[in-house]
Image 1 (cartoon, rainbow over the protein chains, first blue to last red):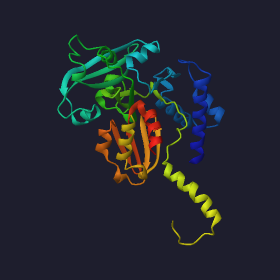
Image 2 (cartoon, helix red, strand yellow; image 1 turned 30 degrees about the vertical axis):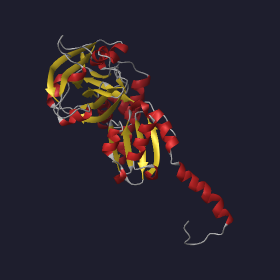
Image 3 (cartoon, chains in turn yellow, orange; image 1 turned 180 degrees about the horizontal axis):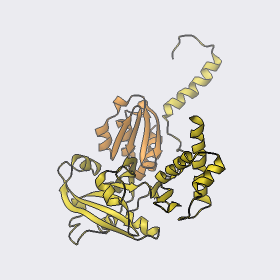
Amino acid sequence: MRRSGLKYVRVRDYLRSLVTHELAVGDVIPSERLLCERFGVSRMTVRQAVDALVVDGLLEREQGRGTFVAPTKVDLEVRLASFGEDMLRRGMAPSSKVLAAEEVTASPDIADALELLPGERVFYLHRVRYADGKPMAIEQTWLPSRLAPGLFDGGTPDSIYRELRRRGLDPDWGEDTVGAAEIDAEDADLLGLRTGSAVLRLARRTFAGEVACAYSRSSYRADRYELWVPLRAPRRALTPRAALDEQVEDGPRTENKPPVSGAVP
Amino acid sequence: MMDQAANILAALGGVANIIDIEPCTTRLRSEVHDPTLVDVPALRAAGAHGVMINGHVVQVVVGPSVDTLATDLEELM
């Protein structure tokens, strides 16, 4: 059992390296027969390895045609740019389908995220986001009505961040909370996925200085996106000086005097 | 700014309650001796946009001013 498990990992990792370093998008992968011979494994083991990479979104299976290298995933950067801005920067054409655009009363969780009092009004926008005509994400956005009076008066705005900037609020920081989830039937339909497919769930609070100006919840299809996070070693932590002083004072004292059991300064 | 640092420090239970404070991009991530001494409403009043307490770790969302706050906190500690 354990051996076959290891064999499957070997085939999978070989294919992964092949896909990312030797083959191009749209190329066909080596046949099952070839892989069986090369690794001395059963067809079932090879299929298991290929399945794993299909689920990961590295490979695409087309009925009756074969298994191909899937388009490269978009790296979902944790930076404060809107979907549209980000797609344009990558040379893709963003578009949206608006599912809802209305003014509503903030529910307690939305009020909390936007630092509003319960019952305050918010603009709510629910959109499917596309890149080059392909559905990529579903996004719900809320923003305080008093920050953007008449937001929907001229129709649904293309970019929330642009609307905020026009009103003198320049989004300059925020926080994303990212989790993995399975998509429900309704959202799956909108993104052209099977129910239960993996998505990246993002909850974002956007601030302009000290003002919480937008809150959004998005589902990004996991077969097209991967999260990219830059890392650095943590900054030196601050510690109370008193604690350091004690250590310094304790040092010489214990050196000069013999230790006295039970003596506490 | 110095006032804000002082208020945050007091709301974390004072210097005596602090093990360490680490500035993390948008948050002050602090480890405290006694989490029950942490005053969440006081932290919010001091300008925190969120407070998460997990065991002895208290995270205070302050935004990009975290670096200046850290400098001020260092002086107060």
